[in-house]
Image 1: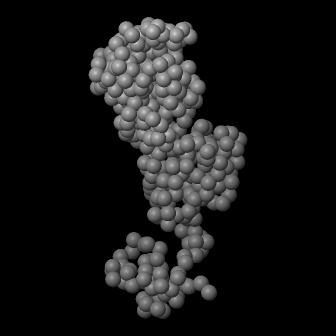
Image 2 (image 1 turned 90 degrees about the vertical axis):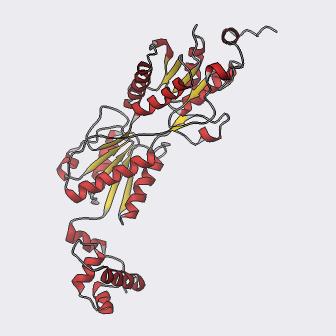
Image 3 (image 1 turned 120 degrees about the vertical axis):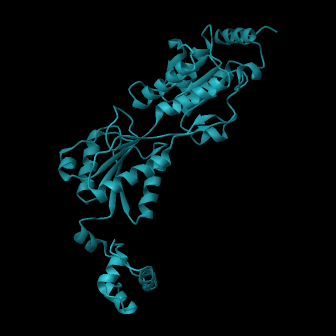
Length: 359
């Protein structure tokens, strides 16, 4: 038989209203001694709050909906975990729906969550604006975390891509590199435009001329990083360092450099972006910029709960800064080269032309 408020009131000798205020964490003033006694009794007696009854009284369900584009994305699980951890700390539950990168499925997901109902919705690593008639009519608070496409919007929490790219580029500049190649991701991605901007801004800050040929396109995959790095190595004035817009393309660039008979970082330094798990175990371990996934999940949840408590309010985009993780793939060009500049260039050309180096 479930324990009721009346049972705890009888056990402690306090009124039912006082017991209710303590167990619902009401702002009504109650002495700390009384609070501790009621909470202890509730714990010993095995009291479980009736969430259905509570939601009827407060118009709150203490449940948050989470819509994700792809549960298998490398960044979605840690963001969702961070959201759930914060919700657990505050005694709330979550319902997760996967939309499979499909705008129609996204609308179905919205309708599904609104039918439960939920107190608010967090959209994780989403590709669409998530606008629907049902969502607008519901007036439910919503927050977007890690937006992939389009321009900045209200109530969103995103990585500061421009700042992160600047960190990577400046690290290479501080090592003495002046010819820094950049492998970008798809131009349609907002993140790619911001990372390219951060790269250019840092070159300008240090009065290093921007060379369009030093920028090569990629598609986030290893093969595109490999191909882009080969193009950079074929330039008459090849880069002494390469910054790739994600770790997978950085790995492809490292393979291309090694296949050209060169060493990382002795001949060419490499920096990635995202801090994927393999960057720690690959040898040489990859210097990279971390994606602040845990911080973004927590900030997004804090923002949503604030809007639920205070009423829906539009907030400007919140940008979260990542960190530079320095590992083994960076070296200063003047101190770490194992060959002279001319010898290295000659080797580049022979390998790229499928010629064997002279003995």
